[in-house]
Structures are given as structure tokens and as C-alpha cells.
Length: 286
Length: 286
Figure 1 (cartoon, chains in turn cyan, purple):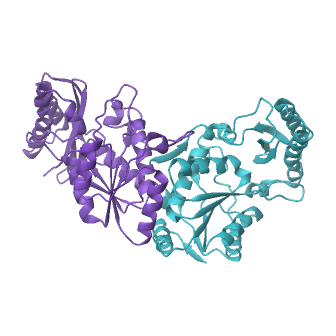
Figure 2 (cartoon, chains in turn purple, orange):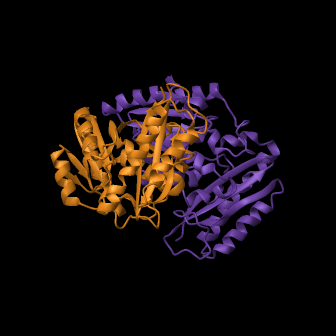
Figure 3 (spheres, chains in turn purple, brown):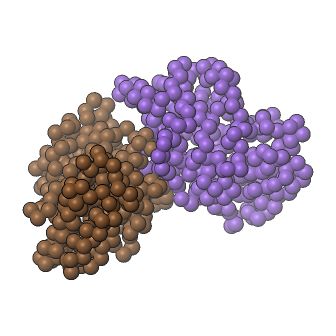
């Protein structure tokens, strides 16, 4: 596995390989890799000639009160996992090579970026959009892989790739879960044993919503009420930021019942202690 | 000359040619071509294997009170000129293929976009940045050519290309001028004969500023005063939006004298009748 730190070196190196007709699979990460990342790498490894990963904890997507400084870093463990996953190139830039002096350009997807997490993390999705645009331009991949746990992020990246005519396929991979259903996340390691147990309520709430829909409920308000009840019954969940049914294309909260055959996004964000956790599932209305 | 209307067809066609190692020169225009455009095409023709031009009057960069509807269109004359300039491919998209339903992404360069014309045309440079990002992604050129008359635009495009790690060289070509020094512009054809004569004052004002600097003046205030006097003496100039000396990197207006050897931007925007005209020169302080 080749480790590349300079943006220009990555761009030039991959440009030459692309000119030889090689397909490139790209998995951009913030490190602290878990099983979820490994399934992205596995898919990318299978579907492309070359596998490129990046680790960059992007300061631009963290708010001033958020966990940028204490975001988990585990370079040794990560390098090991990437090597074992068959990564050919690891891009490992420092912040100044990504945001050089005078950096002043931003990419924003209006509308979607203000929904769900965007309503609670102002500037977050603009930070994501900007860094992903840069990383995609640097790696020039055939396909780039993202996890469904960050559903809004996936949707926003798909939109900006379409809107800016970037020549890359965005692949959304299923969320990986622990035995009790908790979505894998780098932030799970912040949780105390009690908090970790409480976090099981998130998936329970999503499954509760799904069962209600599958049993014929079409009233969006009743689904939301149920989801909040499940979360509220867990005392260690100290804030529910959102928990409801949404349109999976617009991210608008649903107020009307959905017609049969339609897909529906159930999505949740909560705080347990200092830790903010999100999750979602897609449910089709039968 | 091949005419291509579909973004995907342009991207795929040029992608294949690039894979064969051909260099691509790209000249994006809004049509109504004049001699200034032809020098861009000439430079691009000489420096690249393939010459690609586009004509797209971009609604996103016009304000609601501006001249989008009446912006000059001359498809027949333009096609003729492009053919004669040795253009291989002309990209001629319609607005809906550039801005499809649900389009919601914007690219913005903060700071520079609020300076000079940006202060008088809110949203203009965001519209330019967004469409140029799209066109560069579609054409994937080795080099793209822009005229110095739109100096701030050139600077903003260079910045966004650097900031977003786009793999293209931005080439700024010198402004072409009429016999009396008026910068060539598609908007010159709006001018009545009297207004056309009055427009000569713009270049006179820039040359006046330059002579003052060359004769040793280092007081930015005195240079500005002189420039305004020249413009004010022309009664058909009904508004001076800006006319002064600026830092050519930051576009900040100069208040302090510049040190010897430094370069200085003299830039002007005026209205003559309904027509907004801009011009600039770079002067080095001896």
C-alpha cells in the first residue's frame, strides 16, 4: 500500500493510471475505521481495478462546539485495516495541503443541506460538499463509496455530482450494525457501557416505525409519535434532535400518508451524554 | 466542426479523446463573438491538439434587472467565426440541460466575489463560478482561456480551480481594443454612435492613471481622483460604479502607495445609457 500525502502527487499518479484505462474505486474516510468502512472497501475492491482510500478529518464540517479535536484518531489500526482490505493507495493529506492559505471556495447544495442534520449542524453539509468535491477531483475515481448511515450526506453528494457534472458514480452501501442493531460509527467508542446499552433504543425506534408501517399504518403523525415514545423511554437519551418519516428524495418530513409502493425514510438523531448519534432505514410502503 | 448539444455526449466524447492522450483547449463563451474571442480561440488552437468552444448565455449570472433577455445572440455569425477559427467541437447546450429540474448546487469564491463588479452585481460571480465549474467538468480541458477584460472573473476562476483541485490550466489572454482603445465587448453593439464615442473615455481614464503612475505618482488617492475626473468630463457616462487602483491579487482598493516593482490593477465600471461597460489594465510601478 502506497501512502501519498501531497494532493498533486495523488492527482498526477492516478491520472496516469486512469489514462491506462484502469478503473478506480475510492473510499474517502475520516479514519477510526470500523466494520462499516470495511464493507465499503470490500465493495470498492471488487468493482474496480484500483482501490484508493483517504483519511482526512475535515475541520470544515465540524462546528465550533463540536468534536473535531477529540474525534477519534487511530492511524496505526487504520493503516493495518486498509492494508488488509487490499487498498493500493492511501491518501493522507494534512489540513494545510487541503486548505492552503487564501482558500476561499465553497460548494453548497441548497435545500437538502438545511434538512435533518443540516438543521442542527449549520455549515456541516457545506463543509462535506466542499471537501468531497476536492477529494473527487484529486482521486478522479470511477466510483466512490459512502455508507447509508449518513443518508443525507449520500443524497447531497449524489446531487452535487449530478449538478456539477462530475464524471463519477456514487455508490451507497448498506449500514452495518452491531448485534443489538446499533449502527456502526466511529463515535460509538465515545460511549460508556451504560450509554452503549441505551443507544440500542435508536434501532429499536426505527424498527418500531417500520413495523407500524408494515402493519398498515399510513398516518405519518402516528409513526412519529411511536418513534419518539421509544426514544423517550430511554432516560440516557438526553435529546432527540429529530425522529420521523421523511421523503427519501427531498428529505422533507412527511405529514401526509404515503401511497403504496413508495419508499419512506425513517431517520433519527439523538444525543446520549456528549455523543451525537444518527441512524436511518428505508421502508417501502406495501 | 461538430456541434454537440447534450452535456453527456460532450463529456463522453472528450473523455475518450483525452484517454488517447490528446490535449484539449477550451474557450467558453456567451456568443456574440468579437475579435477578443477570436484571439482566445487562436491561442487555444495553437497550444492544444483539440479546440473546443461553447456558447451558453448563462441565466444564473444575470441579475433580475439585467440584460439576460436582450443579451446579443448571433448564432449564424458565431458558427461561421468558430468554424473559421478551427474549432473542432462546439458545445451548444440549452438551459434545461445545464440546469435540470432540482438543480441546487452552487460554487462560490468568498471575498473576491464581493469585490469590483461583485459589489454591483450580487450573485453574478457565484453564477459564473457555478457554470464554469460545470463547463470545465464537462469538457475536461487541458487549458481553458479567458479574456483579461473580465479580470476579476479570471482571478475568481483561477482561485476556484486551485481551491477545488481541478486539473486544468487557466490562461488569461490580453484584452483586444478598438482603434480608440475601447475594450472589445459583446455589449458594445448596444451603444448608439454618440455613446460609442463617449465610451472612449474609459480607456482614456485608464491611460491617464497609468501615465500618472509612470510619472512617479504613488498616491493612490490622486490616481483615483484623476481617473474619476476623466470619466466625469464625459456627460454621456451617467454612472461611475468604480474607477480606482486595486491590488491585483486581492482586488482590494489601494489607499497606500505601492512599492516599486509591484503590479497594480486599474479598473473601471461605468454606465453609458443602459449599457454597463468595464475595463482594466495592469500597471507595474517602476
